[in-house]
Length: 101
Image (cartoon, rainbow, N blue to C red; front, side, top):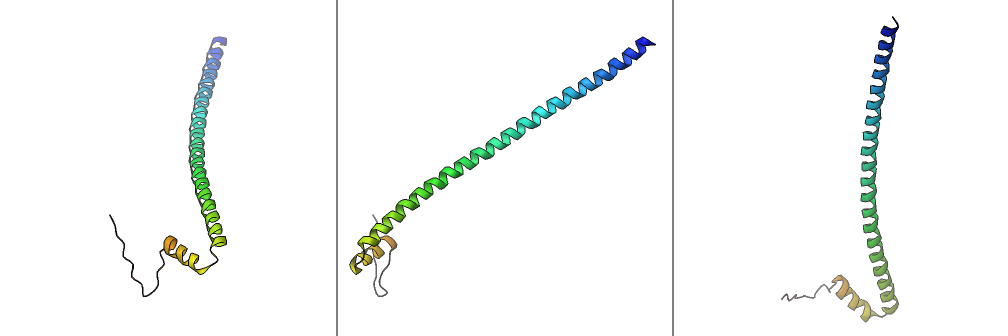
């Protein structure tokens, strides 16, 4: 009778041990997949941040140039030159010819 109880206890203990091992492996796999997913998101956000910082730096430089032009370009001739060169403005009755190579 004692042998039967020991065999049953061993069988039950073996089932629990097996179940715990399977659950542990499952938890490790889920955690690994989650960490990989988070790392991928972090890398994407870092790339986006670098692009936005580069765009910000370009806009700051352009803003400084425009402020310098504004400080220099108080006269009408300079304003007209900037409007023509930078923004492509023309007079209504004027025709512009573009020569391409």
